[in-house]
Every structure is written in structure tokens, then in C-alpha cells.
Image 1 (spheres, rainbow, N blue to C red):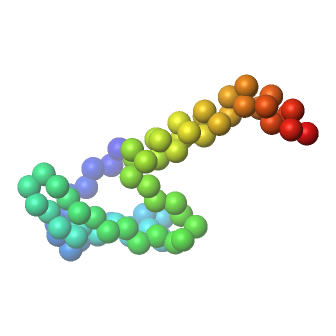
Image 2 (tube, helix red, strand yellow):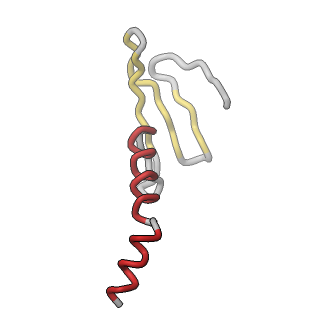
Length: 71
């Protein structure tokens, strides 16, 4: 993991097309802004984990056999 220090108003650039800017810092909370192309999905980690878990549940063997019975 790369750890960087940034101040309010400063930014980092990832892969020439994603910019992360520090918008505000209050106590232990940091507000960031992310500018990325539309085709790049950006999720909070807890939402991303929920999506991954839902996708795994959707791919269970019993679900696949139920789909096969439809055809």
C-alpha cells in the first residue's frame, strides 16, 4: 500500500485519468472528491463488498440448476 500525505485542496492522480482531491478535513473525517471516466466504477468499500457477496450468492449451484430448468 502506498501512503501519501495531502492537505486540503491537494490531489493525487492515478493512471493518468483518475484524480482524487482532498476537499475537507474535520477531526478524523476526510472528504474526498474523485474525478474518473464514466466507465470506471467507483464504490465505497462496504458497498463493493456487498455487491461481491450478492454476486457470489447469485452464482450458487442451486440457482444455476433453477435457471437450467427454465430452458
